[in-house]
Image (cartoon, rainbow, N blue to C red; front, top):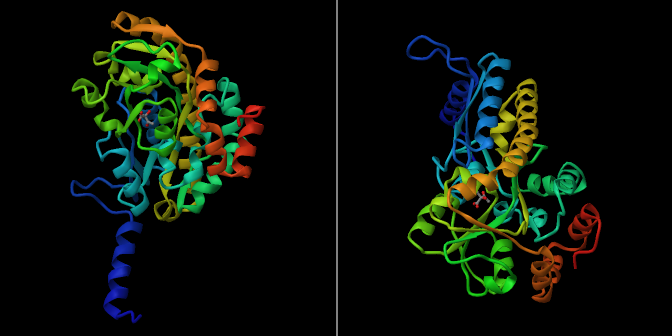
Amino acid sequence: MTISRRTILQGATATAAIGTFSIGARGQQSAEFTYKYANNLPISHPMNQRANEAMEKIKAETKGRVVIQVFPNNQLGSDTDVLNQVRSGGVEFFTLSPLILSTLVPNASVSGIGFAFPNYDAVWKAMDGDLGTYVRGEIAKANLHVMDKIWDNGFRQMTSSKGAIASPTDLKGFKIRVPVSPLWTSMFKAFESAPASINFAEVYTALQTHIVDGQENPLAIIATAKLYEVQKYLSITNHMWDGFWFLANRRAWQRLPEDLREIVARNINAAALLERQDVAKLNDGLRAELTSKGMAINETKADEFRAALQKAGFYAEWKGKYGDEAWGILEKAVGGKLA
Ligand code: X2X
């Protein structure tokens, strides 16, 4: 390959444009690094509230050198689109469910195996411990940077416009939206449902127009995304825990000098811990609110659903896919055999 003088000059100009402290049109100083952070959740969800606070702190602590703009609510595209953009560098930061990330990093979804975690204590011990370390190692191999602390989405519950889901038999033939992820599709196929992969950006409309009859999400999302407007029945299934890895385009991350990276990572990880508390608190208080919005809520027995998955060969199949190393770390984290 020959590199012409012209290419070198172009390269030098591009680097200078990124690296200098420029003066904006109205005379105010513009930031040295202006980055975009995209996510799929409504503005009112704790994730956006805590991310906004973190970005303010980052701007202040870096004396305006780093400005990270928050784009909530799929403004920059659906999860599938934005995953591509964060890989190419069109978007610098993105929060994504480990299960959807598994379309790029297959073993990232191991934390989403059905009925694996009994409670939040077990989740945070695992995700801030060996299981999280293992998954972040896998993500790093895919050329993405990932922050240490995973954000909470929550334990997922099922909703329907057709009727209550009281036992696994109610899931047979059920037209349910699932996020775009092989693990989600596999789980609902094991229940003999008819899962449809749909990005969150289209979920409200898909429910409203009855393309699907149900979906599953934590209470905080059912409330903030107003899914109660288009769903009548809420079944407390706690069928899996889900979170959001805070990802960065690797080149964009490495462009930041070391001291700025430290400020950005520290504030984003601290915000994750606050967001975890917010979501837990929110989920505790939401049953009454969702009932007042007209939802009919029922409890279910986790053991029945787990047994149905076991019988369908779900756990054995995924143990084989993840391999003994990843499966062993998961089982150690949850303190028991899963398959
Ligand atoms: O798409 C969903 O259902 C959501 C918002 O929970 C995720 O990001 C996985």
